[in-house]
Image (cartoon, rainbow, N blue to C red; front, side, top):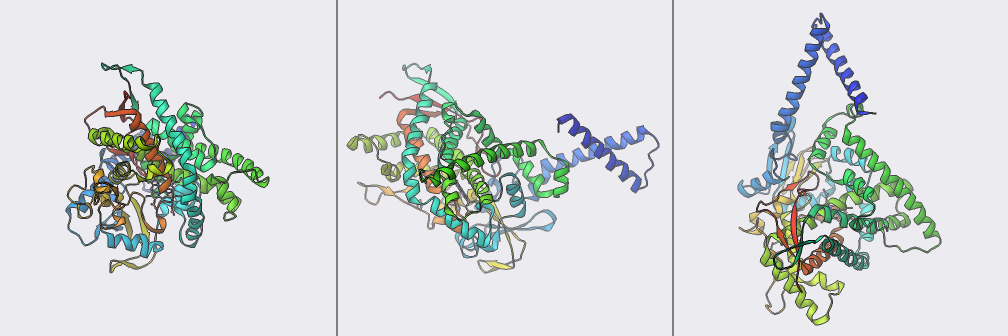
Length: 529
Ligand code: HEM
């Protein structure tokens, strides 16, 4: 519907509701003028309520909203976890007395994420919103259905499959480096070429290409400036900026008939983007199945594997792929952007990483795919940046029946708030420097001659690092995304000196997944070999 006619429909509805409201409450509308005053009055009241909600209400009513203003998701809860004494659970009341429990230690997390994980389900609001815009995929499935589908997904993302993809990821890392080099046109006083570039644009383009190859077997080459329209589709559908937060809140709280009656601009944009993606995926799927029948097909992409596994009905395949793209795109692009920022902001660490890469190459001339997984500092940097800046900063569950967490009774309907940002920065789990960037914590130097990777970063439990969550609902794409982030970071650091362009520490933006703000820029200067 064109914008103007949709406005007129809304205005007429508003007028009708006001008129009926006045009639029902016995208010006499003596002239058009009185009616117009009432119409304006109700509109102003509506605006005041919405404004009040935006400024004050969001903070009180839902943990998703945290503090007002440009604070990252999970910021306030991180402060609570680090300052309020507790025994593993923090309790608070939300809108209309809804009960919320925040899990703050390994014991309470174990109960929610592993011991009784299927009793704590994702919220119906998230499920409704996800199904509407992405379709029904593993990310929001529960119980037996989830268990069954998870087996297929673990198979699709197993180590052998990820190993097969590593040379492709390395090829893509060459492309991102070449792309940055092309754009280094400024000559500085040392006669070195440099450029100031938007980091999110780069990491989103390269991750979109990787996701295209991994999920669909198609290289969109957006890093080379091709297929711009697919970038728009991904951006519209999967990016989770602050506007999407209000969008989600609206879908979460309003009844379906009201949502249908007042479709928003974002609804229409997301529906259009979803439709475009679906049409393309259906066409691809047809081609792949035809190829599969002739056996002339590689089994590397997710679409082919899911389609040919026999575990999913034809209607289930596309939604599963769309939700996987949703889970992997912003999260990987955001984590890569954070990693590049952390390296740029810590020049000494950057220098040491460059040295580590040079030393590793010195003996063989070139790094093997296996080397990327073994280099202690490279791994330390990637783990540390995703610890400090988990792109899924917060997730929620709801108790489906009366149960208990660490021996405490939990009533059915209680919301359980799991906050990776707060756990990853908790001082009782990581020590006094929990909020600082310390890649060293991931290195075991028991033998100073041969430093090794410390898989838990010195924390007493792997559950202290929740960026990929833990247990039967943890991220299936973890090794794939880390393999991408390691290769991109290593190749960029080998070829460029990175610097921040501002002393202000960027904060996470976004709601479902959080990335550095979309205008974060870094300076890349070519290294004089
Ligand atoms: C650095 C990048 C990534 C991060 C930080 C990340 C993080 C997470 C987290 C925290 C969850 C659990 C969400 C919840 O239950 O509330 C999750 C689930 C999931 N992730 Fe990732 N993810 C990343 C990359 C990927 C990639 C590249 C893929 C696939 C291509 C992927 C696929 C999935 C899927 C399918 C699930 C649902 C698993 C289930 O419910 O059983 N993720 N991810």
